[in-house]
Amino acid sequence: RYTAIIYFKKAMEVNPLYPDSYDYYASMKASEDPEGVLRQFLQLRDQRPDLNIGGTIAALQVNVARKAPDDTLGIKMGLLKKGITTYEEQGNENRSLDELYKYCNALDFAVDWSKEADVKNFYREKIVSVANVAHEKEVTDPRFLSVLLAANYGLQRYQDAIKNANEL
Image 1 (cartoon, rainbow, N blue to C red):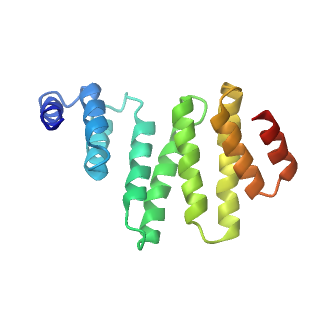
Image 2: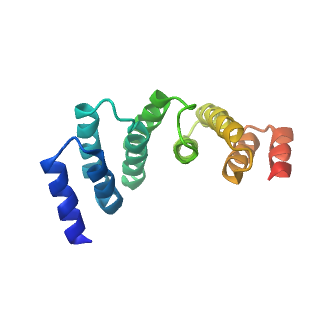
């Protein structure tokens, strides 16, 4: 594993415009050094604006926020908002189901980490919007029905939540 990380890092240095080396490096290193991997992908985005790596960058930003110490909730929310903004810049229609699910999870973290009820409901509304887009793409995917169920319940839309539960 350590040797593979060294080789992928070297491949990124030799050909910094080749995206596969970044993907492999991230798969090996993201859990232990999310900030470093994020920096690498931000450099790749700057060098190769033609690549569609916004979803990967957003997921890394959310991961960095999750790993921030709990006593720095303001910093965590700031980092999380960067990830959410990056997801929003991508648009929902062109994203894969996995990216949409990660976006819903990021929004769910924002619900959990927010203190005010109106802010929580703002993020729940976004969850409903994103999950509906994903549910239209793939009606049989239970992930989005459960996300819709939780968000609608949190918004006190009990009839919609019951409908989601029945579809599950």
